[in-house]
Length: 507
View (cartoon, rainbow, N blue to C red):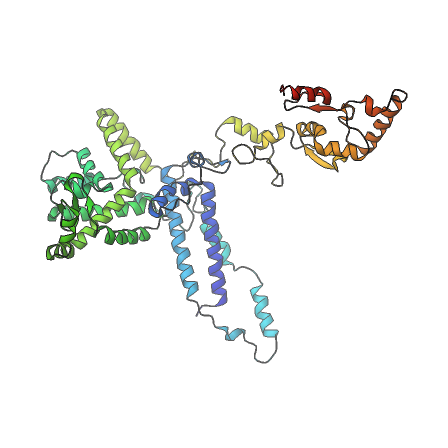
């Protein structure tokens, strides 16, 4: 029976796994971004539409860019995360089935000493194994003095080359050479080129595999080929995108199949196509009339297994349409190579395949250019407590621009109720705003250009007394001092001139 201490150790390991996965996504957001399009293909939910494309292409989280990693390293870390998640769900399942023996914690004699001893034992802190677990899940924990490895000690035996062949290049291309040779025996035609074979495979991305088959779909050779190609495609998809829930995709394919197989396929001028009967019908009425017939029911029962595999292959080819396109482009490019160029390309692919997961020259979070590096040296990191203004893109403005505009300097104004203005520009502009004008008039002072730059109440009162004394005998200061205003372009003028220009429609 599992004890409370065992359950606590399991929960500690679950937390370590969560932190390990988060640290890898933080280091390289591409691990997450590259799966988004595939997830949308599966779910059709559009829940990642809010993520801007430039953010994905720049491999950054918000404003923080991350270094690009090799495809080999990305797949290695994805398979490492997949192993972590398998362990995570296994622990979750075991915790749901735990039954604790609470008898040892029951106090029968009314004394609490025994219970307090158990509580003190629990309060001793994490078990010694937690530190070992933490090291097991940490990146680079499997490194040696002579070989630096991005993988953890927990996944040190993971060999990414065992998942992919050299020609697959870690999920970039499909290795279909053996299937091409098999296809030649299916169609019994040795003149079919590899590009022509790829065109037949690409038919499975839409309904053409039903309406334009190369040979009779009911032949045994074709059925065996479809089953073999389906096995490769489904396995390749799971290896190329290990973080996707392929069990859910298989279940969804089977669910869709039972709906698709009962509906006709529009075939243009040929009318409607019945999938189980492999036959065209000119009119809807004729198609509907044949559904209850013995022939249709017999064909459905006879071919249901093959049709299910064929439909599943169609689903996987649709998900792997991008990889099929890359494979075609690669084959077309190789056909244009000279013998020397073909040998160089083969050597390059072999070097990539034999290279370590973590290159000897690879660095962590290196700025992309010297300017960024210089900016990091000159400017200290922004204080998280700073309330940086938002820019036109909706994100906080860069810290260097914040300092360039002097927004880190505060200017208080007593006349505005000790309101603080950030930056000289905002401070100079506020003297003509309603808050400052109201603060002057509340003290019995008529605003004018003479009070620009005055922020202290005592200074404003002294200046007002001085202006009143110098204007004695020549009328009241209110009559002599003109109110100045500022237009939208920042031009300062008297209120009288401003009113005249506004009446004439000049401002």
